[in-house]
Image (tube, rainbow, N blue to C red; front, side):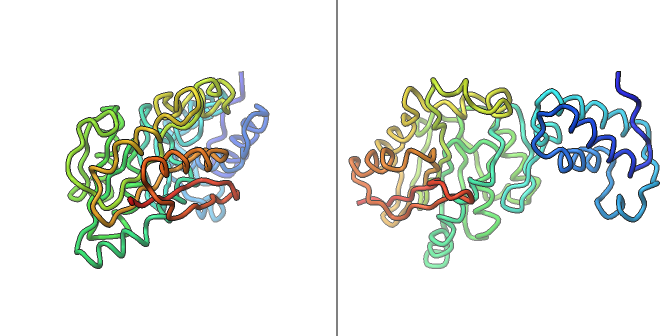
Length: 291
């Protein structure tokens, strides 16, 4: 049984870090300990430096204790906090949503100039976010382009409820709607941008993923079928009838999938418009235009 946590902020931070170090399985114990302590105690980094003897109440200590146990058992820190920052936005998470990753910000950057240009030219830009999850991609674009509107599509009602809550909390609810649909099944209308971070892990590789991904991200959001490419085939086959004449499709890909995904879209009549790498230098986003 571990000793009780100290109730002064400075020692509390040091002990929280020491516990996570002791597990041997936490990549950044200093950061995770700080995130947990600040979140559950309602304190800031500045307060920890300026007032390390600040006393933390017993309820907060108990919550920090429970959170450290969850983190030590392998649960990702942002699942424990219940939110993750994405493109400067705080997004709530739920068990039905993928945890948005910084690499996906590459997709936002890939289509943002087109969204801005379309909104400036036409006074509107309609975005369809397939597999919206937390709403990350759509909400990031809406936050950057006030004339844009977005529809978030997901097969999971729980994910859509989370996305709608995020939109409301960010003041974007008036420009964001949700549709529960298996890909395009219940979708209607035409869009200037179709964006997707689809499941792209081959089914047989799911078991080899990092524990934090395999055990805590929803399998629906990971499994792309036998070769990981099924969602791209569906999007390429069905998207055209939902696109405006001047439009773009942007998809996130696995870092080895650039050639295969490009072939799928080109065979369906799309032209490659851009290919972008993520912060680690891996192929991550492909953009296509119709015709």
